Image 1: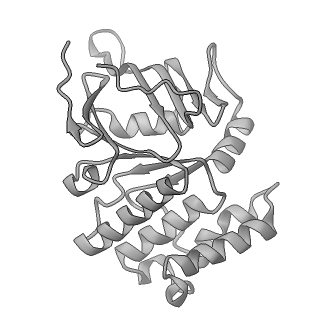
Image 2: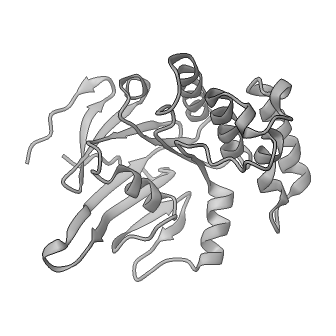
Length: 246
């Protein structure tokens, strides 16, 4: 079963993604022709056993890695195109403007306080610093982080660090959010809050894709897809279990 929804307004559209590691007898196809559409307002969870390629797929969707074959579009812009794709400068601009990343280990810069980590995109060349700074400060307030904004990452709880990371991902109002095990290192209360925030991001019209092995995360998704043997299959759609064949 192909887990795609070929709608004209899809924020994310991936077709025929192939990623190969090794060569010859050691060759392993991490992805073998995976397709995926994600619409605005949709939260999609991708599950699979450890080493199945979930994080690799997220990196391809976000332009952090390039596929060996296949295409990826985000908000009508090529991430990976037939015969190649955009150059690194254009790809960097696309990631900055259209894609928000939420990583399992937060990736906050240890020498900066929480607020400075959120506002980091406002300091990049070509950024609208005034707009992004105002947006970042509003997110810090909205996420209940104002009282700890001057603390550095090592002084923050895991839940606080993940909220700062989420604020940084949302600062440019990207149409696509990609989250890699967003609650994997959090306690139940902090994890529930992060899932609420991702659900709210989808509710604001963004497309959200998360890879996870947590049942509490998949329970909040609109669709749950399984990555196995390099292919995506639908595990649950609209609250109904789907058993893929073939």
